[in-house]
Image (tube, rainbow, N blue to C red; front, side, top):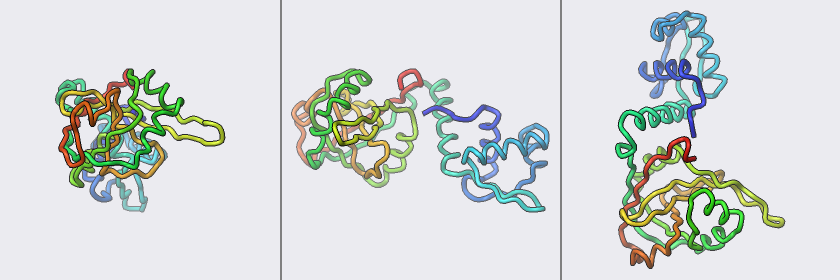
Length: 232
């Protein structure tokens, strides 16, 4: 994922964030906003219209001015730009996201999906490894759900959907990671399903349970480094 809006619109969105519009609807006139962004009233009005059309803010207009609140989509956009800034200013090490979780048994569906040629071929081409036919399931705590959502709003490698006979298989997002600082793998997330944030499904070239001598209940660390635009 990359920033969808131009820098001048992002700065207006950022200005509204500073005024508190991510927490509640803030009351502000286009004259007041123009003073905040250092532009004309016409520019401020146009920025609001464009941001509203992109679904990044909600606006209620009255004779006293506008009440504006940044939507979830707008907050996602701010987060994408934040990641871009952090990448260039701090380096990728500053952005490592780590989770500690517990190994659990899954429904043993991983082998079926990973063995499908449509997914298998793309994993080899895009992730650079021959996948073991199965997934390792790691359960994370509820307090980590927000960080996982933040991770999934960032850059990813997309596996395209495909048809296999009469059945369609949806697209998926992959997030490269390292388990226990030892084995490279990737979190795989179906693009359009409502998934459980508490369970991470990891794919790897290795049979991770055997490689790391894991059993249900064992604790593992999963570390993610950010992808750059050229990697996704």
